[in-house]
Amino acid sequence: MIATGSQDKTLKLWSEDLQLLGVLRGHKRSVWCVRFSPVDQVVLSSSADTTIKLWSVENLNCLKTFQSHEASVLRIEFITNGMQFLSTGGDGLVKLFNVKTSDCVLTVSEHEGRIWSLALKKDESQFVTGGSDSLLVKWRDVTEEKIRQRLEEHEEYILQEQQLSNYLQGDQFLKALKLALSLNKPLHVLKIVQNIIKKGEFGLNDTIAELRNDQKEQLLKIAANWNTNSKYCQPAQVVLNVLLSELQSGKFRPSGLSNTLEGLLPYTERHFKRATQLLQDIYFITYTMNCMQPHLRIN
Image (cartoon, rainbow, N blue to C red; front, top):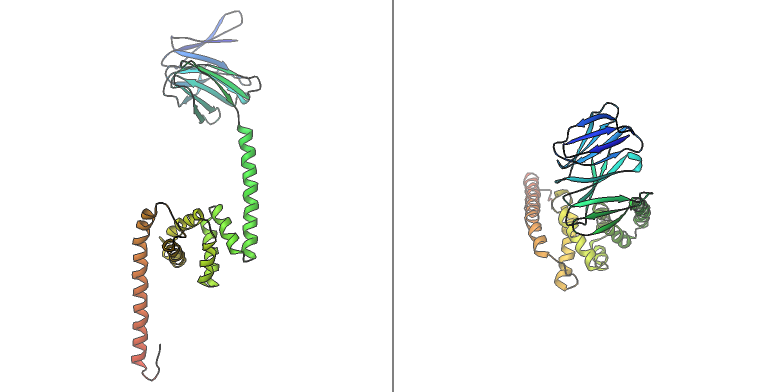
């Protein structure tokens, strides 16, 4: 079977002896490219109307319309056994579509003009595009490499999570804090800080002093976030006190400090007012109890 597309906005299907089998109508402008699926009885077409359409060869109706390009779609090619296809357009973009979901899953750009040609390597590991910018660009499929990299990163993450748990169980708070910061685990950092405070705030001074400047800066941002929640304001204020002391002594040099402090002040003032009111309430209760039972002095 032969498929053709033309400037009359139609696709036509022909037998091998050039007998017309059917006409497919639906595009609003010229049809630039037509491709048969390698596995299904469907044909794909691209048009100057910026759309790509999937047609049934059997009943000649449009099954799907794919939209993502902002200019004429000039070339299309099926890949991965017909499950996906590549497209190139007058917008200088190369796009990858999922046939089943109709989603554009990837858009890449290296050309500065229309991409007129698209050629695939037989194993589909690479393809080449040619554009009006006089460039031939060679592309390589890195899907498997990315999957392998993600698996390795996930395995490394699991190992670090286990290591962090071991540090916490062994009360190795400095190592635990450094690892929690590197993993960007604010909740774990909070638990570590709370455990250190339980053993005495001076221990927190010594622990923070062992951190690098960038780690202290990260801890400052995390503590600033804790400070927005009254539930965690106590460990936040303790950490801030230690870091500001190091700032005054020159042991800590954060960047963008003014913005961080601007965000800290309103919440800190709110916590201070609440703590002051609570203290006054406690004194009032103590005073009332002493007045009611003068023979029992309550301090």
